[in-house]
Structure formats: C-alpha cells, structure tokens
Length: 157
Image (cartoon, rainbow, N blue to C red; front, side, top):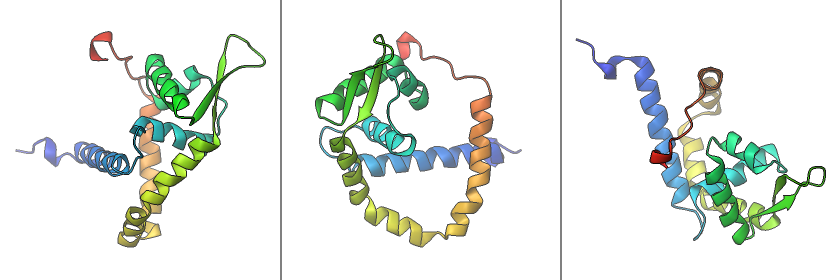
C-alpha cells in the first residue's frame, strides 16, 4: 500500500521545506549579533524590490502581520538599518527606507556566506538551477493565486 511518502506532491513539499530550513539555518548562523533572520529577509526584499513601501505593504510582501512588521522595523531602526519616515504626500502614512548601514549589513552577511555559495555552485550546474526554476515559479504562482492564507489567530502569535 502506498503511503504519503510515495506521493510526488508531498515529497516535493517535504524537499522544499527541508531546503528552506537548511537555508535559513545557514544564513542565521552567519548573521551579526542583534540581527534576526527576518531582518535579513527584509533587507533582501529592499535589495530586490527597492524601498519606500509602507509598513502595511511590507507586511503583505513578507507575509507577516502588521504587528510583526512594526516590531521588526522598530528593531531595525534602532540599529540604523532602516529609517521609517512620514509620507510627504499623505501625512497619515509612513514609508520605510533602507539605510547605507542596512545595505552594508546585508552585504556583510553575503560575504560570510561566500564559501557556502561557492560550494553550492560547484555542486550543481547553472543548467540544473535553470531547469528547476519553471516548476518552482509555477508552483509559487499557483499557491499565490489560490486561497489566501489565513490570518494568524491571536492564540498562535
């Protein structure tokens, strides 16, 4: 009798989860004191997408609650990685800007990960990475277009 471990859809999600866990652990081990993984993720978002978003926009992009993004931004602002400024066109809103210190911190983490990145690139060809992308992108698009994730309940926070 075939079990869940024999289903390719479940096996794919198991592998994605394991890869995500290992990647997060590898990055977390190289973060400077006081920087949490969520801070690194937000800096990565700014590097890829640019800054200037509102906290609410960032919460949606990072798939976390508004309270969680507020906490993250306060901690990052305290160490100088971001600046939370008033919106010039709408005084009720705030806009988040990454600082030079934030970009520097992000780059330092990338430097600390250099050996890991070189090892990974030597273990797999560029073609193998490119072959994996269409499926992963389609899977993500399907999940994004599906039912929206449930808002975390107060009990789970």
